[in-house]
Structures are given as C-alpha cells and as structure tokens.
Length: 314
Ligand SMILES: C[S@@+](CC[C@H](N)C(=O)[O-])C[C@H]1O[C@@H](n2cnc3c(N)ncnc32)[C@H](O)[C@@H]1O
Image (tube, rainbow, N blue to C red; front, side):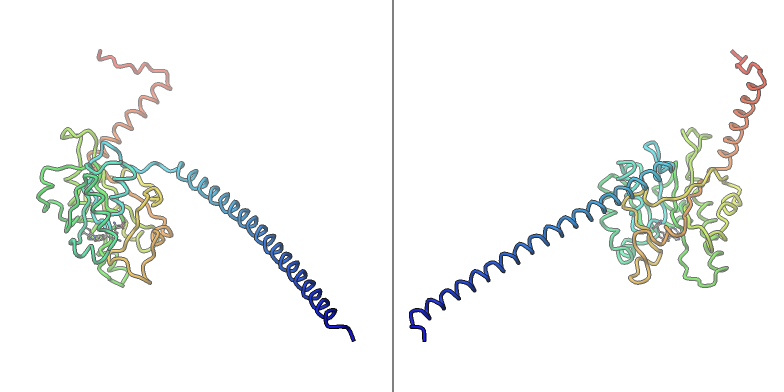
C-alpha cells in the first residue's frame, strides 16, 4: 500500500491534469466559438453586401424607370387647386417634395375637420406641414359646387386636380355604382371649368383639369373622357400613367377612411390597378391648340415642298 504523502501527490497530479485538460477544452471551445462568430460575421457581411447590391440594383432600376416617365406636371408658375383630398398627403408631396413651396396651393377636402381626423389620423400633421409651407387648406369643399366657396370668387387656377374621385356611396350594384360616380364627375367638370385659367381673358396658360382614376372594371365603365367632353365645355389634352412613387409621402386613402384588415397601405390598392391621369382643357383652348398644330403642320408641308414660308407682312 502506498504511503499517504504519495497518495496526496498522486491526487494533486490528477487534479492538475484534469485542470489542464479542462483549460485546454475551454480554450478549444472559445477558439471554436470565435471561429464560428467570424464565419457568421463574414456570412452576414456577404449577405448585407448582396442585399446592398440588390437594393442598389433595385434603386437603379427604379430610377431608370422613373427617368423614362414625364416629370410630375406641376410647376412653379402654377396655381393649383386640389379637391377630394383625404389625408392631404398628395397635396403635401406636391408642395414640399415637388415645388418646394406651398403658397400656390389650395388643398381641399369634402370632410369636416373632425371627420377627417376620425377617418385619417395621419392628416393632422400633413395639414400642419401644408399650412406651414404657406398653402391654403379648406374643409367641407364640395367639388361639384365650387361656386359656393366665397374665397374662390374671381379666382382661377392653372391646375385643378381630383385624384381617385369616388362617390363612396357604398352601392354594391355595379351599374348603379358607376352611375353615381358618373354623376359626381359630370357635376365636378361643370363646377370646375369656370375656375380654369384662360388665355382669352389674359391668363398666361390655359388651365387644366387633372383626374386620376384606376383602370379596369368598373372604372373603365365610367367613360371619363366621354363624360368630360359630353359637358360641351372640355376637350381631352392628354393622358399618362400615374406613378405614386413620383410623389414621395403620398398615401392613397379610401373615402371611408383607413380600415384595419380592409384597407392596404403603401398605395397597394392603386398600384395594382394601373392608374391613369387624364388631362382636360377648356374646349376653346383645345380648339386653339388644334388650330396651332394644323398651322405648324401646314408650314412644315410647304417647307418640304420648297415654298418660301417667310412672313410677307413685314
Ligand atoms: C378614393 S378617395 C381618394 C382620396 C384622395 N384623393 C387620395 O388620392 O387618397 C375619394 C375621395 O373623393 C372625395 N369626394 C367624393 N365626393 C366628393 C365631392 N362631391 N367633393 C369633393 N370630394 C369628394 C371623398 O371625400 C374622398 O376623399
């Protein structure tokens, strides 16, 4: 039998051995963990880089697509009336992002202030920002009765804009629904036309009415062009796709407000309906435009035929 001191020595040696082994094991674990962390971080970096590349590529593609579009048709020289705003995000985008001024903008809604607040909680900040930028914001403005607005007396606008008009009458029957929207649009055209700028009375530019609607059924059944020209007051000038991404901050809203579980944010509801903006001008302006076009075409034709087309009334 080994003496006691030898046993203790042996025990100590065993402990030391165990301790060394544990330390080595821990060191290996730590090294493995460090390696795994390094691999993960490299992987993350790669993924982030890939993501960045993808988002840069997506951004580039979007920029390229946007550059092919005509720019938003709102300019420094315009005086703009917006009707049927919901949360005032479109008006705010035109003022702050496109024109960088608000003093040329009158933005209106059919809702009362309290109705608006109830339906579109985000509208309060938009209204404040618009007013801070110098815009005029009016409530309870019926776009079919613009002559009832006292401050509009003797006023003319170079652009009158109604985005995604909808009577919002909640009519389920498609035909009756279409008729109610046609009625709204006809009355709007009649109401708005007298408030358009007119070169015949000395304004610099003929005014335009811009109406943006979704395409497809039932919207195509509204027959918006025929409705406008059918008033005998307006002619169609042009139309183009409406791209909400050209209006940063614009968030389309339904007439009934934003309903959780029913409404979709981020303009999804309009993006999948290929919306289109129709531009109407007074019939007289359209006729003058057509005359000018005809004259230019005639001159070109005569020039091609070798005729002297210089003005002989010197
Ligand atoms: C589908 S929402 C579109 C709202 C907003 N323009 C947009 O793009 O988010 C239809 C809008 O038409 C408005 N509207 C309906 N009848 C109107 C009228 N007679 N005068 C003014 N606005 C009207 C509603 O109040 C509602 O704000």
